[in-house]
Amino acid sequence: MVMAVRDAVDLVVDWLELNYSPCDTDTIEAEVQSWYDHSDIVEPEMLAAAVLEWGWWRMVAYQDWIDAKNKWFEEPPIQYSGTPSICEIEAAQHDMIWQG
Image 1 (spheres, rainbow, N blue to C red):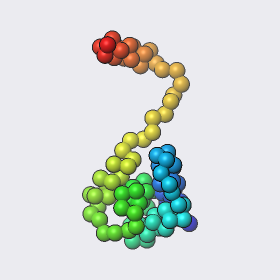
Image 2: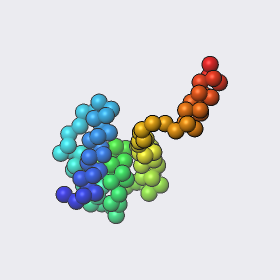
Image 3: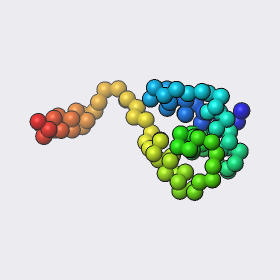
């Protein structure tokens, strides 16, 4: 299996598991492979977004594909960096004062 397909399958499976949705890895792999085979796209997030949005390959506008990617994978995950900085603490305190 091509690395882009494998990575896209992992993204779809992870997303479905995190959202308590049933998933069949063999079907997901076949769906990702259908998008990979019928397009020039090799970015795992784009392939995964297509599967999450439409399932099996179908003709879609490139902009729709970009929109799907932004819908399903809109931001990189937030990574905890350890102890918050003094700026983060002061900003949180400021927010707490104004909220209530």
